[in-house]
Image (cartoon, rainbow, N blue to C red):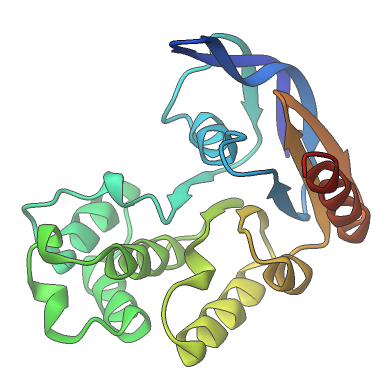
Length: 220
């Protein structure tokens, strides 16, 4: 379970402060795969960073129950001068798992071929996301934070990613950011909509999609 208590986060802009979160109180239940929906620029990726602990809120707090992943798809967690394999081994050591098992899993899943042994700075954004997804899914987390990564790659890779994700959801929770409503329906059973610094939780993902689409229609 993840609880956001009176969470506020903002950034200065030339026209004033931009609020990603304004005194948000939200509970993400255990055992749910929650779609985090919102228009472009609403702050979904920023909120994932705050939930993961990579970014601090202005005020309020995040209460985490169990192990929470780094945001999958966030390539900034890798050292750009190390190879993909070296980064995978480094993460394995941090989390105390077998480095060879981690590398075998990532090599099989990410399908990077010889690029796995090249510096991450040479990777495309898609390759970085595939590496990040493979490294994260090789680890056992109670809650996975996923940012657009399931849309990376060709149809076969996306199908493989979705299957692996569903397997992990048999015993874990997730917060998923994606602009694809078909992916939301396929991967998630609940939803939260971020709009103008507020967040509304829906235990039924279809209700979350309807609310999100109504927000988008009002802005057109």
